[in-house]
Length: 255
Image 1: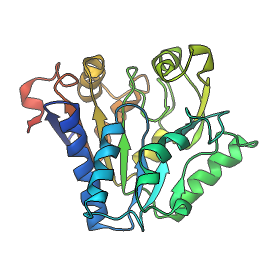
Image 2 (image 1 turned 120 degrees about the horizontal axis):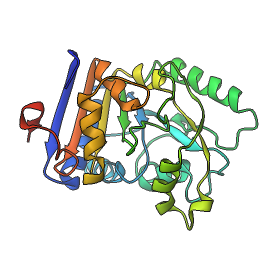
Image 3 (image 1 turned 180 degrees about the vertical axis):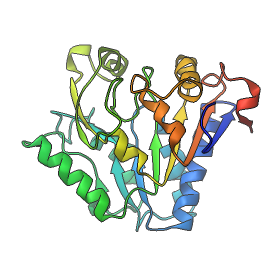
């Protein structure tokens, strides 16, 4: 692994163990700073983490009452009520189960008439809230974080993204057909993500193993957007064994 800054790499036995570890880190962040600003991700990877957070909340160990959240992205063109929108995902998996105030929840408006204004406004809201304390990330098979596809410029802020065919195909499993998958999304940019004080990246499954290896060991390049995380000052990467399969033992901490 290149880079001299702080990156903790943890390999969990399986997806459930990875999810519990991630949820405990997020819960600790909330405990230490009850008004934390969290950056949240969607998709299959963080679902177990949200389930664990709900359980921790129901046990009375944390409260979301003062927490503020900003989601990484939203499909462009989908209404909130669409079951494939990320607003719907977050409500179903987390928000309706905890005591978060919905006025403290921010997700890009996928139906914004003026996309550029929506993106500028999103950046301003993040800044007004003091920036993101902890950003949760997944990683795409092509190395994207958020919806920042390969060749996206690292200096980009929140913006409208044209989705790669690989991403469209990967996400088609959530839709009735590939034709229903939106071709664009509003996403936090790489620069926005890198401004986060701490970053927590999760990866699960053997199909992510090659991407994870390249993210940690190859040169930093826009062709692999996640590689920029090598330069962040506080990154924790949690992998299940399948996603860590190509890493040599010396590069990670085994729990």
